[in-house]
Length: 92
Image 1: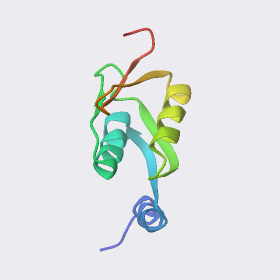
Image 2: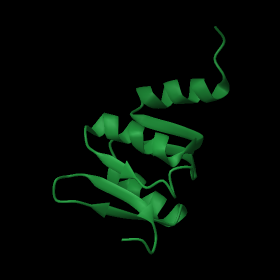
Image 3: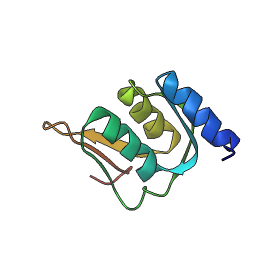
């Protein structure tokens, strides 16, 4: 089977400890990080469909969360039990 350029990018990035997103819904991007890090990440429905693109280090969850806070204008809340909640700014 012939791979798309996005699939090739993703495979190469994965081998380098990175992940590549091409217009992926935020819910899906965060689910990938959640699986890799073994932690709960909850995404509010009002921001779940926002699109994410770029190349990120799989080991740098905090860096990715900082990026989406600024780039996608969301609020990231870290709970004491390790769960991360992502919601719209202005919503508590």
